[in-house]
Length: 386
Ligand SMILES: Cc1ncc(COP(=O)(O)O)c(C=O)c1O
Image (cartoon, rainbow, N blue to C red; front, side, top):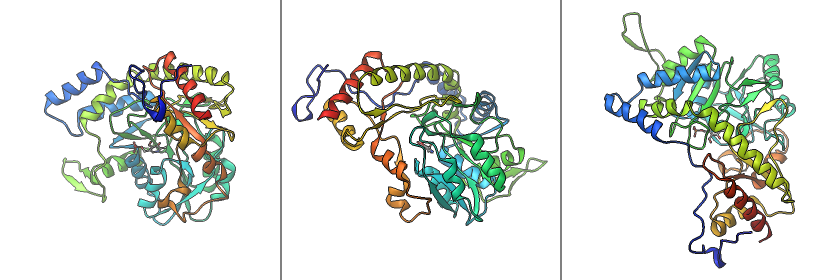
């Protein structure tokens, strides 16, 4: 085993460099696309955004795509475009990034937090059923870390109740449920193109839908609520905001889209290697699960630290300070965050709260070598003993 951290967390001179959590797969192709936009003189939402939307929708198998400034604004746009009632309740997993529930609060509605499965980290359909009441207007399930949620079960619940589903697919580009890509043939699915995601536009997001009316409202709402009449005159039909993506960002996405499949294949190979090394390490951890009906993209490779190991905050600190490896919590338990104190919830949210303290995301990116992965696992083993 290579011990590189010196006493007091000092790094031994000549040791390997810092290993970040993510390094986006960007290069000459993205530069060339961005250069062409800068040369064109048109930088804001224009032809490149339209091209990216067409290509992204085709890639996913959706009829329409509406590019936005982030997944957060795409989620917000979905709530508005579906015309969900102000003051309604929307069911959200407790174990997610705060954006999923913040958009509900910003829409003057109430999130109802529900527990997740400990193996796939996805919202539990049985708990979701308990959260549905007279005021519920939508379920907002999250595809966690590139693994799909139990899609049939949740859509079945929603259709029985006559409510909407808004899929938070921030991490689910290329994810498949029962062989079908997430985003295909649905009413509202939102993706993120943040650099930690499989396809990046630096910052960006997208709402995809197969519903023409939802699409048309979303296009207007993204751009101050404006629509052009038959003669091309602008009218402000809705009180929309500015959620637009720029052509500079879309250009990066156009280049990235060509690489997405190979990025996913490489992540799946690397995840398999992590599974092998971690599996034979005898560490007290839970490896990521890929259900037999799922195609996992490993947008994040998330393990769960067993009870005999320190909690994730300590492991994260030691790995950073002594081994120069960046790791992260899986994601957050919303009910434990100050901004969600007193939020409605179902049950004790026990699993989500446990995962908040015990989940750990390991570095994963295309240029991470096999040797790096071995070093990360060995360092994790050392950190667990310190
Ligand atoms: C599940 C989930 N939803 C929403 C978001 C927000 O995405 P964005 O940063 O593109 O707004 C994130 C960001 O990591 C996320 O993980």
